[in-house]
Length: 279
Image (cartoon, rainbow, N blue to C red; front, side, top):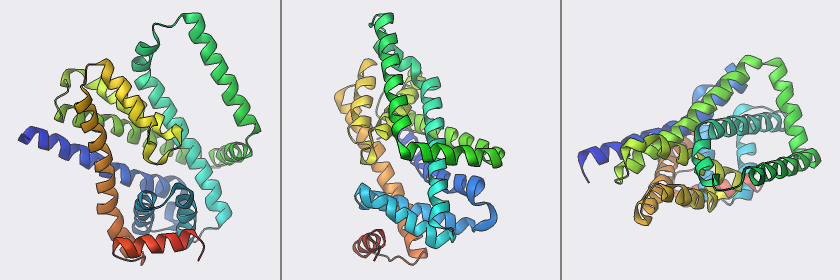
């Protein structure tokens, strides 16, 4: 590996760490204000990010809620409302950036379709999404909470959306650096960035831990259209996930220790399970 390639991967890892900082910064600015010290907010999200890799998905959310109650002192109802608001903001930011920045890549794949067929697909998808949202009580509660917070703190919500959008763009730049480090054409950097964002969004909406299958399948399909080899695609996939795991460990273990949750991986894993299980 050359010095330039190593530098590109180091830059990608720095962006990965910056992503882990973005969530506590967003919460501190938009939701918590001066009610909690920055250090506690940072450690809360670093520790729960690590827990999301150590625990099954069904235990991740209860753990985050319980730890957030302990650290922030807010009620469960208040935190649940904030989480609903934040989920809506993330959906808005991710959808917006993905459509604006990544649409031209997806459009190239859909171009062989007849315009009428494409229109029908879009309309059917929109109707299904509206019906699902209309009958989903969780979505309705999240929407009401989102509108309520927007009404009372519009400037903070604007900051939260902008911060999330910057974080999304960071995903694109991270994929550019990794792709170029493994020999892909730097002249089409915008395509690697757009494809990385689209694939990550596909992984998010898939609902699988770490975006399994949704992210992998989408990135493989999109990168293949620009001539990336299976080996290069596999390297990008493994490297991106490896950096996420490494950043979660490097930032999460010290944060968990500062919160008094333990030190070693086994003791910390057990402590996480105890908290998530309500014991």
